[in-house]
Image 1: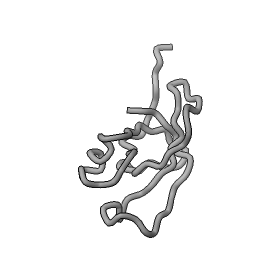
Image 2 (image 1 turned 30 degrees about the horizontal axis):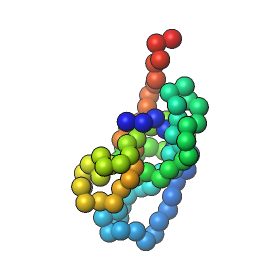
Image 3 (image 1 turned 120 degrees about the vertical axis):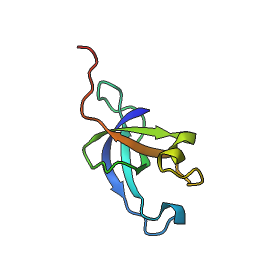
Length: 89
């Protein structure tokens, strides 16, 4: 799993039928210290996250599992909302 921050949403009125009803979020990947890390990406929301929240997300072949349909065309999925991160300090 990876850490990111929701920085926006994507509205797509036309999409694959398996994605109808899905919410799309723009995720800014973050390093554990909160610094931006890499380019933003679009992910399917599975937990009801909103703009400004830090989240856990997955990418690649496990992403369709997060939306509970192996045949869904998904490259990234938000799977958790972060309450806090403790780096031991």
